[in-house]
Length: 311
Image 1 (cartoon, rainbow, N blue to C red):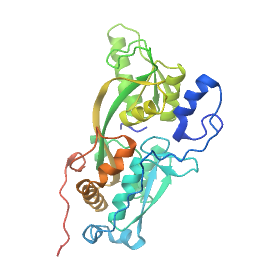
Image 2: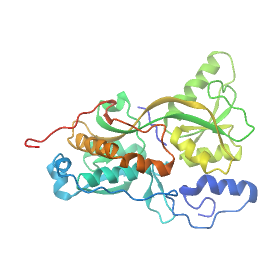
Image 3: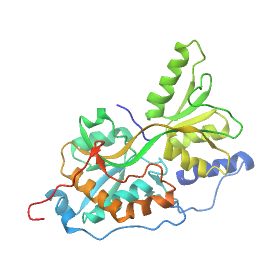
Image 4: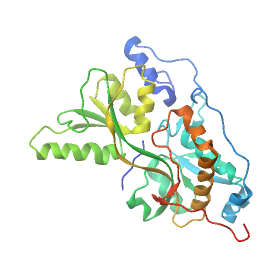
């Protein structure tokens, strides 16, 4: 299975790269408060749509909320603001979709590797943590696809690193992500097979840690999901730059139990957000446009909203 995801020193993950950029030049830590949401952000919670609410499984409708597990920091999908609240564009989208369904969202922080098992065990309704919708995962879960992502690399200005030819380079990744298990590993194996130096991989617990390694020069580059790289670059004060184009694109999806009617309900709500323009209004402040959807897919396949009898 492929996991594509993901105080005085840096204070909060929301400002990790900016804080470190400051630390590089000033050997100081950031002490000012930051709310975390980008400029122009407003909360979008549409009114309940009765036709959509009718699609919600009865047990969930009765309790009036869904439980959604996530694993911050994975900015801009999900991370904590200066008050410890979990925010991000994925959180904005799931709250807006749930609002259309007449539901609240109980956001829970959980170890990334435990989220899918928790869905299987019935203690969590939805996985909202930058999950890549892969064929392997679809054997056990359904995925409501909400954005198209890919892999991107970044490095410091003046550091020449080509993601397509990085033999001998040192590259930072987040543990368990596609960058770790597939991108860098596969490329390094190819280097060695060609009799060239392997890629040295530095593995970190978080995407922030990987970006920081590149920013501080511990690594020549960082490999991560494109939204994560672009978010870090935008907040690095010019101390990180993208290298090459986005590659290995695939959809991000909300994970739900296999064949659960909650999946089609969320997909129908998300498509309503797309059709109304609220979807792009939610993405815009985060600077996310390249992977925006025009039509929602489920398990990477076209989706048609179900209809209840009499609707």
